[in-house]
Length: 137
Length: 131
Image 1 (cartoon, each protein chain N blue to C red):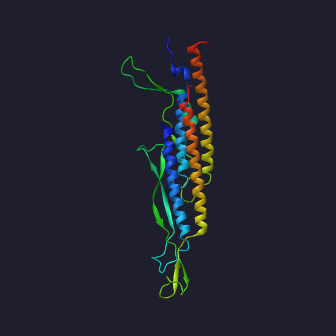
Image 2: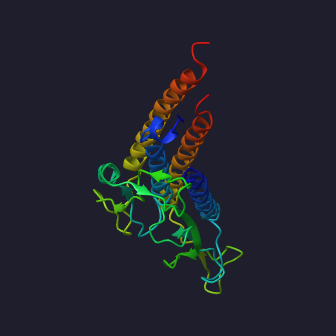
């Protein structure tokens, strides 16, 4: 029954969006975690989504979402001259994470909106199924 | 004289399964709203219903006593949606459009259910009589 698939699909999307929210909150939390070198400093992370076919058929209607992995952003980091900072390098520089606050806030809103629409889908499908169960009564 | 559910209920059961199929397709579109390269799909209802009106798919019977078991709607063709605002990552899902379609589909499903329920009420009345 295809209505059961909706629960799998919307569920996979909700878990993927919550991973995205998690990653965003991690980025925002670590936005000011300075480090002594480029390798030691936190890099902004981003999840990579891909569609996953539940069935082997190419024309299957049930296409869920999977988080393929988390990638670290490769944009260059901000370098600040702060010789008094305990983590400063020999030359007196500290590195700030390459987290773009504006990007992260936009990502957060988008993830929560997507999550909400999937919850809506789930609720509607549940009502449809319950109504079907009451058929003929 | 036997009550044939196929004749009594008409096309409604197959419509119901079609709407169910479509709801899972639209749910997949909404779920993949953020997946790069995902192409939104939908069912062309007009063509499916036109096909259902013309030819009926009947199960193969190998014995005279077997039931035919008709399914009025053959498996629908999935078509790719034409995007109005395709995004840079190749995704063609427009969440608002999909949500509207999903809501519409749910209402159609419910109304088909209502019709089916009234069919059942009629059958029950016929069985019980006016008691």
